[in-house]
Image (cartoon, rainbow, N blue to C red; front, side, top):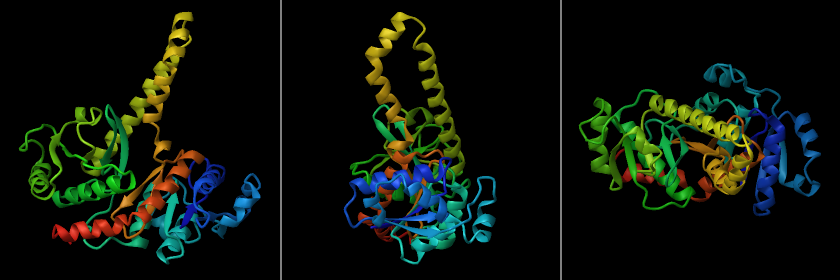
Length: 335
């Protein structure tokens, strides 16, 4: 398994990405290999902090440029051909890497993946999802920003791709799929959602029905489908709410002796709560629908998150997720 890693991507840059590569290789089979894509001098400097025996399982591909977070995604991808993201995706497209992972500019990675890797046959629109916590575990929300305007067929394909990804990569079976709307009744919602509901009923045997915003954190379904505009708003609101909850708990702790004692007793529960909301636990998610494996990580990814993102990339390849998506679309006569 050869995975190209954008070393320059993310807020923490080479320190976090190379640490993540090291953590991955510590547990991975001996023939797994990480291609470190980025500024060669910076990479060599960081490799001094990694045990020498792992160096032979890492190779360096020099890419001196980096796509900044404020740059136009498509323009930057086309102009900065020596950037770590462009070089890494091209390695994957040429078959010199089995997957690509980055914590860099999300928009550029989505645009670049589509331009470089193209689409899986039959896929109308690639989409990106994200895990959210719920009372029953994690919920996969899709789309969260790749497509702000969608047709009913797009939403149906998002559901099918998410079903395959979550069930195969995270070994979760018998998943329930919900369609986000303003009411449970099948006639509730805008024209796109109402039409999509009928398509879901016909094509998806595990379709639960419409779900509302309050159902997300209840864990009513395992997968929730919506357009990228709504999904992105939901995702960012969920992140801010979690941050507010954690800050509120920390402020309360230490107020007096009794709250300190109480905090000590419930510390395991607090730790589990934080873990369930922590993006580092799943590392990253792929842009589903492109004809390759392009895993998108959170901009603040630490070594732990990068490690888990590399595992997602490997599992995507090992489980032949893209092949399964193409077969599913063909089976449903949607190609």
